[in-house]
Length: 373
Image (cartoon, one colour):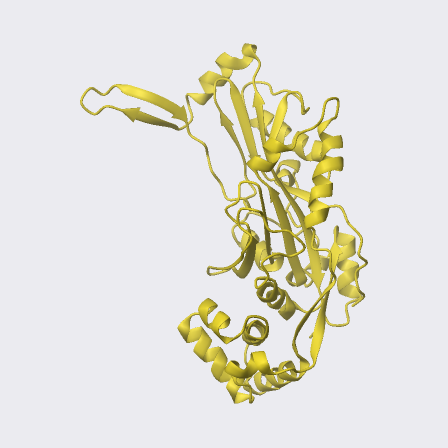
């Protein structure tokens, strides 16, 4: 597989939260609509008197393809996926223009609400969250999970961790149809946060829930090679970084937002990982046992984690049974898990490259000599 050039490519906007103060002439229509939506109230049981009431915020997961509007008599907040609002069948790739993404969201909200909304401009609308995303194509499917294990051991990756919380957290998600890992940096930060995860399993999960459709079937096999990189500019960052006088939102996005993202972008093309000798022995073992390829990937990721973090670190991450099972497999090929950190065996590089559209993804997969490994 050819190596990626160290160039900054365009991220796309995977999530937006927008707020607008409504003009007085729409307050009554907004109030009538808001009164039909859920509210949170404090009331006195003895008298039944309502002391106060607020309009409830409808919270949805950030990987949902829904678009939700929260309405009060004087304000509207819209949050969700611009890809869904724009009518795309999935969010593998999306819109890289802030104006296009915001107008898609606002137009979608207009179709749901019984009163007009103003057009997108920085003197009317306020952006309180943006998620900027890119995809990386990885040479081997097994290396996607391996890379997540390796990167999770780093406190920062090119300064992408937030000031409030700069330690990485590796979280495993599993369900009947969705099994993957997500690495977070600054997960609870109100400033900026970063995450990486395997996009393939996530897309299959969305499809199984009728939340997405894969419309580029020529890229079906390539999906499991995708590693997703996402930077969230949360409420604090958006409050402290706004367009200067006379600057449009799009100019601000091109000047400040993209520059910030570039500083935290995963600017690298390879990571050095575990021994080719151990990987070869594992492949031979699993070939003779007719074991599933997913188990081979998991054991080799376990081995890579032993190399990077050591025995105690791996033992703290894996469950007791999984740690014991994977250790027994390594011991069966002559590798003692407690000695891995001290062994210096030849390593190999995992190559990966940024892909920003379906044509790039197709080309990367077709020219990848490692895709069948």
